[in-house]
Every structure is written in C-alpha cells, then in structure tokens.
Amino acid sequence: MSTTAGYKPNLEVVSDTEKLANKTVDVFIADALKAIDARDAFCVAISGGHTPERFFELLAETPKAKSLPWDKVQLFWVDERYVPPQSPRSNYRLAADTFLGKVPIPKENVHRIPTEHSDIKAAACCYEQTIRQVFCLAEAEIPQFDLIVLGMGAEGHTGSLFPNSYAPFDTEHLACAVYVLDEKSSRITLTHPVLRAAAHLAVIISGREKAGILKRVLTTEPDEVRYPIHILWPVLDKITWLVDRDAAKSIRP
Image 1 (cartoon, rainbow, N blue to C red):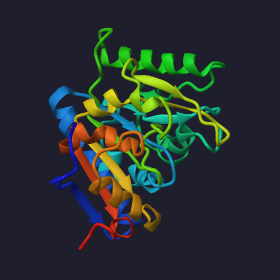
Image 2 (tube, helix red, strand yellow):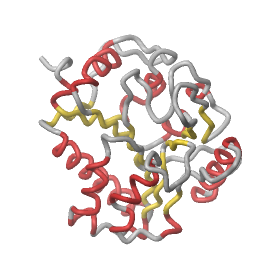
Image 3 (tube, rainbow, N blue to C red):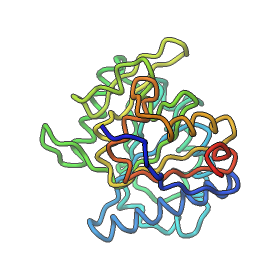
C-alpha cells in the first residue's frame, strides 16, 4: 500500500475557477496532442458536476481546443447518474449542452453510459462492452485511457466510488452499478482498476468547502473505506491536482 507520508503532490494552484477551467483545458489539449501524435487517437473519460462545467464551455470556445482533430477523440464518461440522458441531472446532458454540439466530434466517437436500459446492471455491462470494443480488449485486459478527468466530493469520493459502498472494491468489472440510498438516483461508474490504469489523471477541486477534505486526503494515511479517492494512492505519480486558491487554503503555507 502506498502511503501519504513524504508525498509531494503534483499540485497546480490557480487563483480562481476561471483559471482552473483554463488550466484543465490546457491539460486536455496537451494530452490529446501527445496521444494523437503517438497513436493517432486520444481516449479520454470526463466527469460531471458543477466544477467541470466551465472547462466544458471552454472546450467549445478556446481556439486551440476547437481546432483539435476531434475525429481522433474517443470520449467516455467516468460515471453517470441512472437517469435519462435528457435529464438535467445527467452528466452526459451537461457535456451535450456545453460543448458536444459545438466541436466536430463524430457521434460514433461519443460513448455515453446507456442509462436507458431498464436494468442498471445491464447498463453497466453494456458500457463495459463498449469500452472493450473501442479499446479492442481481450477478456481480462484493462483499458488505458490517455486522460481521466476526475473531481472529489466533500466526503472524499471520486467518480461514483462512494464511502460505504462496494464499488471502490470491485476489481472484476470495468464499470459497475452503485446503489445510492440517500438520493434519487443510483449510478454507474468506472471501477478503480480502470482509473489506476490511466496514463494521466487530473483531479479538479474548487471552492473553500473542499479545503478541509483536500487537506485530510493529502496528509492522512490511506483509508480507502473512509476516503475512496485513496484507492488511487498506488498511482500517485500519475495524478495532477488542479486546485483553486479557495480549495488550497488549508494546505498552502
């Protein structure tokens, strides 16, 4: 098990949420160009929620982002609420409203989580099969995304790997169902072996309400049950923490 002691995170702190979104776009562009130059394809998984919304908007507004060879981009989602794709709570819907219709990405390159299935396990299985097909994986292989963009919740979850759920410990699947009791919808998420296998992980964190949890996560010994983001500690060297000043206030001298 990797420990936090002595860990110096690759931490990039910016002054506000606008600069945070711009920095995330820079990471997206750099990783895309690197992957396309190397393999003629860029496989990326994005998250939903409030924090990445401006990042998505800038993908459609920034000239360098708009001019990417989007036909070589394979776009996936880290997680999704089990709601229809047209729901305002859908992570796919957020991306569709902010940038998907404004960049020249082919529809067949957009791989949303199929929440229209009547059974959530069937939906997770279908998403896993899509990943296997796009990556041309054998049965036991795990995909290597070029970039996975994550956030972190106020209790230390990432993706939909929540405390007190089985999902953080599922090593059998690429995607799994997450049953949530205290809100309206359950979820589907990529599992931690997929997150760990990525070439690069960018964790975006903003707001003073995240300052306390960020400090605890970065300074305490790994506890994957309490803080599921600690499931990533074996691959700390591949994580870039993109943090605004408010979220970083408890960890900066």
